[in-house]
Length: 127
Image (cartoon, rainbow, N blue to C red; front, side, top):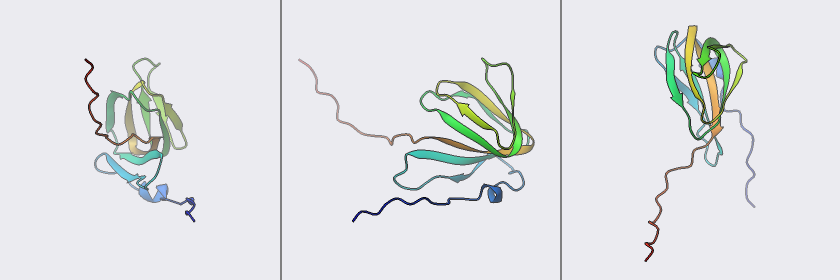
């Protein structure tokens, strides 16, 4: 009889978000086999930033758990505040940057798992 997947408590975000880190770090990541999601707890020290970038393939959900910061988009109306409890949706194709505030910021990111790299045979040549 196959075993049924069971819900699991994976981490205590409060325990991972004490004082700010000295550099950008992934304090925790989802690593369970068979998962359909990827998730990370990212910590940025005060004043650190994630440079402007575009995610072409995946929607990303961000939930702030500690500290504060801002998210900015070139097409938006300027920086938007991020505080504990903020849930931010970053649709695929959107361009954004994120900056930590005076006490740093810690946030979860959750998105669909990227498929692993696959090696496939070359298509047959057509005559």
